[in-house]
Image (cartoon, rainbow, N blue to C red; front, top):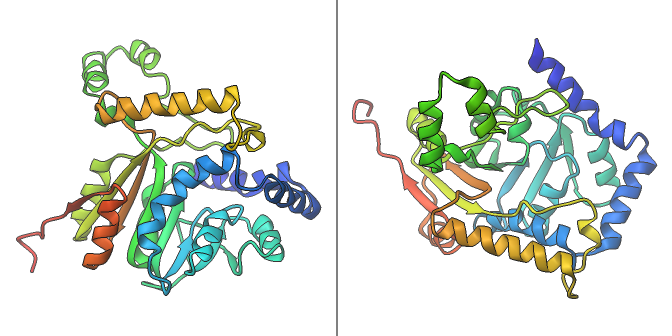
Length: 300
């Protein structure tokens, strides 16, 4: 089946680009050498900061899914919480373990996690969900092994937030050639063979309602300004590149606040049980919009 071929290609992608253990170690060495005061790290922190309201307590256990380099687990570990890093292929994670970046790793297929029900407080899937050939199969598995909730950080589907694009899509539904030219990334595929799956608030609301889950939280961010060489651009010194990146981000943030454009990335927390009042306050202060899912009146 095609989804198996896609998984096989993903499984070998990192070894094609970093074929030896020394090449992988050199990668981590370069990351350490560039430090934290650069554009690449700054942009990455925009993603990771979405986790902060859930990292306030230091006794929670996390499972990271599709955490190829171990950096997701590293951020959680640095907060004082526990984290198990997983990916289809652990060749890179094994090196991260030796380098002290993580303290535990395991191979896992997101569609068929080997863990028991409610094994972890939270499951994190950051920038991997859109690679999955069958994302909903993976979502149900992540919800199954989580006790408190699942965090998904992914590109947002713009059509649900852009009525004009949706209207044109409906008007020209029969003219496939025209609508595909107008909406060029309507069907995006990656060289490894997967469809690039973009997410929306509404689909996660429906998912939670269907499963009888109590709450979904959303936070919208604009961090997609990475480029090759971003790690060499200092955030401590003025440069034309840094200036234009910050200007583009400022413009996009402004358009988003004015509701002219949707955000680039949607962070979603699907809660299996209502968080306590302290966590809810932290989520709100961090910019999360919380949606309480009503109980099904026909099921008690």
